[in-house]
Length: 264
Image 1: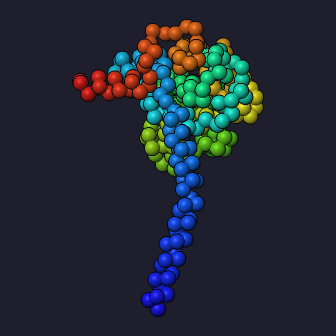
Image 2: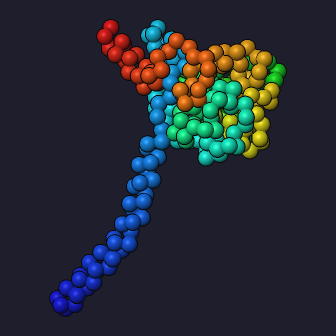
């Protein structure tokens, strides 16, 4: 009996070694892919409002939000499928590396959040304009938008966003635990909405039918947004630049704000 058990033990070890030998190349490739993905994201430059908030002692854009946006981007938003008017803000978009394209989109959503919510993840607004004050089919509220990108619970049904009205309704309106206010959920939803506009529907980046009035030329919020789009990644080669150090990123601004806060 002991000889049989020893024989089975030898066989099991032999099988395990063979399986490990076969799996090793796959594990190596998987590790390389994960490493590559980690290397393809980087902090975006700060928008003017981000820099100003840090200087005034406010809470600036979190560099983690850059990574959320960059990792949520579908491949199509890094390809030639993006509409031509993206070059309004990033002239060399089609010639840039994927890493720089991701950084551009992170900057874009930072500018969008600046114009929509002042970079405040707990921002909530009530709209009275007829074209905006529509009843949310999920929450039943009218004209209410929330979070960094000022979204609604109806976006969960329309775009598959990770919002949970049934859970959120039990929490206080400004509770950061509400799913719609959580930056990751809000930003990932925004990426889905924009991808639907420019990739699925083949519409321009700037259109009168855009989800956000901020991306509708001629509106007051559009003018605010354009002012925030003046410091995209250097690889974009945008001719005009604000007086912001080219070496600065959302990470350096965030670190400086933390240092200033701790010194008081």
